[in-house]
Structure formats: C-alpha cells, structure tokens
Amino acid sequence: MAEGSDDIQALIAAMARLPGLGPRSARRLVLSLLARNSGQMSQLATLMAKVASTAQPCARCNNLSDREICAICADPARATGEICVVEDVADLWALERGRAFRGRYHVLGGTLSALDDVGPADLGIPRLLSRIEDEAVTEVILALNATIEGQTTAHYIADALPEALTVTGLAQGVPIGGELDYLDDGTITAALRARRRF
Amino acid sequence: MAEGSDDIQALIAAMARLPGLGPRSARRLVLSLLARNSGQMSQLATLMAKVASTAQPCARCNNLSDREICAICADPARATGEICVVEDVADLWALERGRAFRGRYHVLGGTLSALDDVGPADLGIPRLLSRIEDEAVTEVILALNATIEGQTTAHYIADALPEALTVTGLAQGVPIGGELDYLDDGTITAALRARRRF
Ligand SMILES: [Zn+2]
Ligand SMILES: [Zn+2]
Image 1 (cartoon, chains in turn cyan, purple):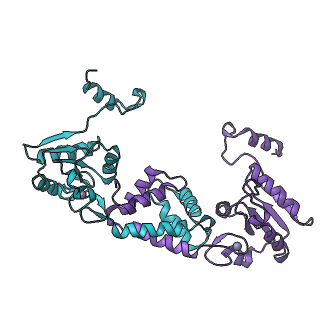
Image 2 (cartoon, protein in one colour):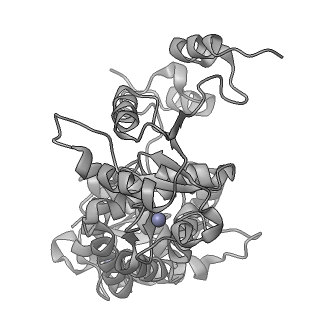
Image 3 (cartoon, chains in turn brown, orange):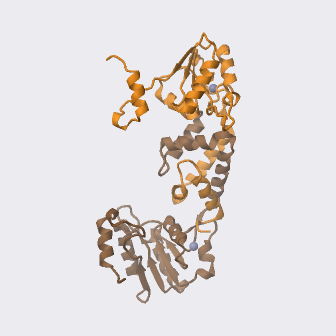
C-alpha cells in the first residue's frame, strides 16, 4: 500500500483512467485536493454526486441538462426555425461560447458506424425528422466534424431531410489567426476553392 | 447557462482550478464521466467522499493515511533506525515506488520560509527530534529537493540533529538514462565533482 490507503489507491487508479490524465497527474490531483485540510476533496465529491444525480439528456435535443427539456429547447426566443446538428455536447458548448447561433440544436451523440453498429436510430435521427415538423424548422445546419465519419453522417442526414428544407454546412477555410504554414493541405485546398473577393 | 446546468458549470469551474487542468480539460472530464449513463461520475464522487472523510496525516510521520498511525510507522519491520526526511507525500510515494528504502519517513509538508512565515514547528521538526530518541534512530537521510529552499531546510535540520547521528543526503548526479545534452549545468557540474572510478 504505497499510497496511503486502499481507498486513496483506488481513487488514484480511477482518476488515472480518465481522458487526459495518467498516474502522475492523478496522484498530483489527489494530493492537491487533500492538501492543508482544505475540504476541497469533499466539496468536489458533493458537487459531483449532485451532478451525477441530476444530469440527463434533453428529451428533445439530447443536450446535457438537469431537467427533461433543456434550457435552450425551453426558451421560446430560440424557436428561430433553425436546428444545428452536432456530434456531441462538447460541440454544442463550443458553439454556445461563440454566441453566433441563436436557434436550437440536435445532439447526435456520435456518428454512423457500421463497424460499431451505430445506426440512425442510435443517433436520434428519426427524432430529428419529427422535430422538423413539430418545431416548424426551415433550416438545418449540419455542424459535424470535418472527418470522414462526420461528413458521411452529414450526407446521410441531408438525404433524409425533406426536400423543401434549407440544409447548410459550416464554411471550411483558414481558422482565424491560423498560419498557412501550420495548416494541413486539405484545409488550404478547401480554403482556396472557397475563396472570396475582398 | 451555456453548459447544461448551474451545477455542471460549477463542477467544470472547480475542476478547471485544479493543478494541471484548465477549462478545456475540465469540460472533457465532466462529459466523459457523464457519458453513456455509465455511473462513472457517481462512483468517483462516492470514492472521493470516502477518501475525504478518512484521509488524515500520520500522527508520527505526517504521511497521508486513513488511520492515526500510518502503515509504514505501524510496521515493526520498518523500524530499521533510519528516517528519510522528505518535503511532501508525493516524494514519499516516489521513494516507495523505488522500493529501495525500507526504513521510515518524516514528511515536512514544505520548506522553511521566512517570507511565508513557515518555521520549524510548522514542518514538524521538533517532532522529528523527539522521534530520534523514541525510535532509536541512527541515520537520518535528508531527501529534500535540490532547490535553494530544500537545501536551506536540509542544512537547518542537519544542524538541529544530535551530533552522534549519521546524517546523509541523496547523491547528486546524472539521472539514469539522462543525456548530458539535456541536463542543466548545475547537475553536470555536481556529477563531475562527485565523479567515481569505473
Ligand atoms: Zn434540448
Ligand atoms: Zn507514519
């Protein structure tokens, strides 16, 4: 029992398995949380227990929420007739931080994958189709990752949507502040093809 | 409320303040813990609450433990007459992983600092002195960091210890696998001065 107690060792092992952490950072975190009898460890435990017991996917858009319908779906000001389809909640958060989109979302929770047996129903695509009518949607923005899986899923959804709907995707190009030197060739090519007049 | 709920935002903010984490990794951790209704978040919360309620400093050596006297101090096989003095629990863990030292420890919990008002009593140095007699100690190994603060504290302790005692420090030199090119000049100089015959 090199690390204080069985529980402390179990906690370090559990933390070390989290994405982006490892044994070394897990040990540092545990010692920091226990340092100087600060009560930080127990405060964080309480907060995590509360989140664990209340967090749930929004029944409409699959966004992470603490109630059945998330704050965005419940806000009438966001009934703009636009739905932005994203792969996961982290993407929704990223778009919300940008404050550019004022409509609603649909969180797929992944991409279509024959290999991993992920079909349209697993991604809530039938539910998206029924939302088009229910919420008088006029535009669907497919904000999926610019990966093969993301774009395959985007094409599948575009084909499944009613003809009358406007379907758009995010513009591809050079990121703000991006140096051409550091971009991959695909991005440069896409940005060149989509070039615009000054 | 961009991130799901007030509690989720508070949790992300609390995690983002931990050493080595930031907003981005805190968001990733929270989403990963909540992913796929795995119950990971509540399991981790339970484990942290348990550790928070049982973790305490060893009354003898200040090691992190779940009882009054830690497993190392309670183990008669480790009454070798040697005490290894370290700055913090992370250093004790590092030495235990090496499995080279079979004696006991004394964890200072920091270094002497006039600026931060940290004196000998704050570091348990009087308690270390009383342990010398109580535990029939013959050697004290000062395994403090090779920093100015660590070495100042080591010199203070060495001066305070009884004359008859053997007082040693860790050897300084090139780390195993270390490339000279990447070492700082002080380490190379120290290794050269302490050079040994092949
Ligand atoms: Zn929603
Ligand atoms: Zn102890």
